Figure 1 (cartoon, helix red, strand yellow):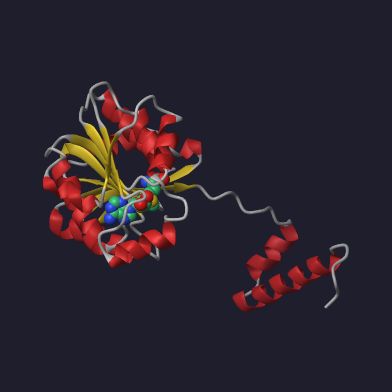
Figure 2 (cartoon, protein in one colour; figure 1 turned 45 degrees about the vertical axis):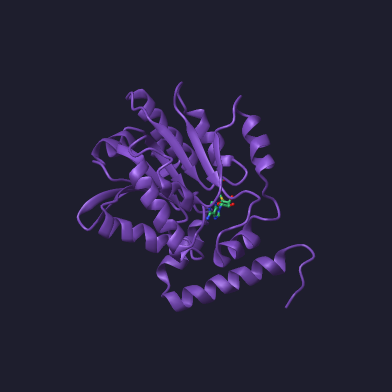
Length: 263
Ligand SMILES: C[S@@+](CC[C@H](N)C(=O)[O-])C[C@H]1O[C@@H](n2cnc3c(N)ncnc32)[C@H](O)[C@@H]1O
């Protein structure tokens, strides 16, 4: 889903003649970087920043690296994957993302920033500030893991940026938050111009503190068909009885299965 959303938004920027570079904070073995590289136009630069196989700058980040990435992550692995899809490597900054605060990414030079590095609040808050400065007025920032149970620091940094830092949500998917500091209306129109439902997605509109935001998700597969009599029975009975009937039907199914043990 996010692959589709990235592709749609980046292609729309290209079609509209939006220029600017692309920046990724946290690239791991290159899955999202390869996709970002697909949308570069001549003269535009993709910069990726990742620790890869170097040490983290603080103990919490080092623990995060050991737990999630150390076993598989090397810079050469990233490079090999990227070069399997593109003729040239992006600009690689092998360092903590905090180094990007030194101004090496010129202010207003980017049209798209993907933040997917540390999940710790302090790091993500810094990454959002890097994105804010790097993005041009109509540029987009995408933040991964803004609502996962194991990443409350990302959620805190994202919603803090919304409520105190002028970040405006545009699109929410189960994994990623898409926002901008400029006017979100043209991006909403670009998103609504696509018939996502025909492709098996759901699109919903919400408002957050009076501002509209879109939500994109996968449509649920239709429930397995039930026989008419079973459906009627389950619809008519009160919930407690319905649970008993479900249990009884489940036990019956198990008992009928060839080789199943009778309880
Ligand atoms: C979730 S992975 C990135 C996944 C990648 N975007 C993708 O879609 O495949 C997170 C990456 O962030 C990097 N990382 C974690 N903390 C970092 C930090 N403080 N500075 C730079 N990179 C960091 C890790 O090395 C890891 O490669």
